[in-house]
Length: 251
Image (cartoon, rainbow, N blue to C red):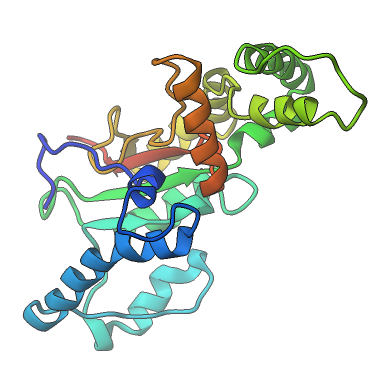
């Protein structure tokens, strides 16, 4: 059970993977093996010592409550301490209002566990808002390109396919200011209204995972920034990913 003083956990760090084991530095799968092996061994030991049960359901997430009720004789569980819906919460998938309406009743009541939480992930909000606000998107693109230029050496342009130009276009995506986009996204996606209707509220500060665990940190100079961008590119992340934790209102 999570307590109020718990530190938010970060997702696995690509740098930690690169620093794992003795595999060659470019053997990412080999490094991932060394990184995960101790955790898998620990989990394997838990299977033999703890009372664990797994229930696998292949259903539309919006029907999960009924599916759990139909299979309750197998697992005997209908409410949970923690639910992670990944990025089903993106508005072009299921969206926050529907997720809160359907999934929040599956959390344990505050009387059973005041820390029971629903975790939502937002991967595409910046792209979605940029489609809704083309002028804002254009302004952000200009700013991020100018920002990216600070981290690359100045060289004469050698045509449309200039490698330096391609790199500039690539890294500007990691330097976008997503804060304004996020505030607009929350409002346009009716976070507050959806929370009120479902009896939920956002945690101001995450206790399970940081809101932006992959956020690009600009402290430390150009070298550190480019190192982070390289790691993000390897991982397939862009740094704007956001987690929101929801709990039952009233605490």
